[in-house]
Length: 347
Image 1 (cartoon, rainbow, N blue to C red):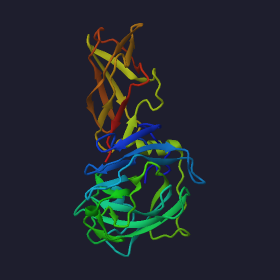
Image 2 (image 1 turned 90 degrees about the vertical axis):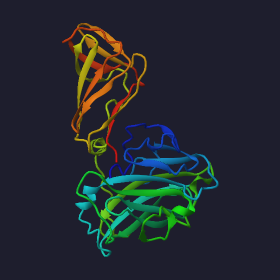
Image 3 (image 1 turned 180 degrees about the vertical axis):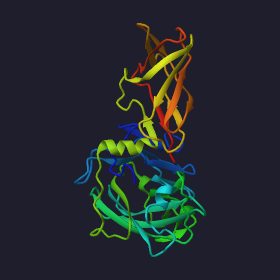
Image 4 (image 1 turned 120 degrees about the vertical axis):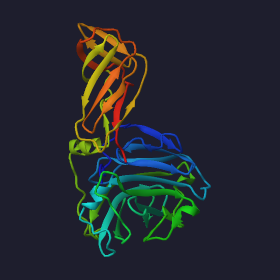
């Protein structure tokens, strides 16, 4: 598990309202996405929060801000992290044996008590799902949950950087998407006992301390959560998402650039870590969002675009509002605190 202590939030360290087709997926805390499958209703505002159990500094907060009191039969709302196939294949877990286990553990706090579900969803070979129940016994109280999951002869993990397994926490589930607890099946995001966490705008949950260990453990035998420095945690997150200006400075440098023609600027970017796959770019645009300091002057311009990229670097270019001299070099920088350049190779 990456960022299991919820410390890194490159996209937004504030609050983001997530709903079907609105900020759905990755929005705040790195590596944890929230999905509203099959046009599920309701809105959950997610954020990184300082509410946390002893030993942790932060959590992922999920606040229901628009209720859905009647969950459709195919609807599912969940939060998940996806793990690369090669990580699972080389983890040491004998995943095709029902007597070999991995153990998922996490800390959760919710204002709504009752039965909740987690799932594992494998994607290589024949897709399979494992569903397990856990109980939030006391409202607004941190509780640790430890769930041992057996292997299955139908599981396959390719030795590649693709989607290996999705580990998810279900918040609401329709009747056509539930199944039996503690079994591997073709499709089951929850059981029929799953609460509808989205039934009231007073419902708030917090999640942190997520770990996945090879072996069968209980709460008394579980290895301690592997604390790591923020820098190491950030580097692991940057394999999937790299935000150039994580601090939001309106003058932060992008790099050294040069005028290829009198109206076309190029700027190379080296990534701090090798990304999972060749990334796509996430740019914001706006009047004078960027600037080029060269030849004792400054050109401001509105947009940058991706010329080419690999897993280790990218070439950006700008061609709007540019008027310079071919061959002139200089500093390319942000010129507005709302400007954003990021690269994503998420699963």
